[in-house]
Image (tube, rainbow, N blue to C red; front, side, top):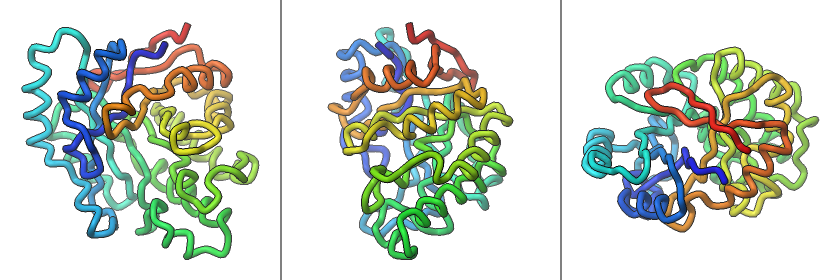
Length: 270
């Protein structure tokens, strides 16, 4: 069993439900050995006002993290963040990351070209779902080219969670030109990707990203891959990790990755 969950949110993130101490207890009860909190830092993201501000109070976050982990001996708890990448934010995030001792940084595209595909209004801008997805991937490619200061790219096919038909009509071949460029850029920069198990519980055919993306990443030489539940509440901690492990093995991976002090550590899957 995979015993490391490296994508978790608490009430310190706007959309989190559970407290940090509750998430730690859940991880211990499920036999995990390593976890990493990755609260949201989505600077300059056009979320609807009712959703609130997705910029974690990092001082309060780090203080709470230190309080809860200073004497924690049962499990290794890491301090991370999930950045909402947009091309104009490179220097802003470089400065931000220099101010805190993060163990792990996820770079995710939640908004592209000023729009977030979480909202159906994004898809109304296009005459086809395929065009909406292609535009999302093109936005990711811009970020992959300009960002260096992250460890793994989060849920690469995030838009597939929310499109009108989800991932039902998705094939790698439809977008291979842009997806190949994204993956090559990530690999050339020595960065990795994650397998995000939330896809299973959100009604998708697989995890985020799709198995075909995972397989192509491995074919291109990608070796750095973290495993995250994207948990926002206690029941979601390490959810569907058995399915994620099977997907990784079927796609040719023999190791998964955790990070400490921004350094990759490979853990055998078998």
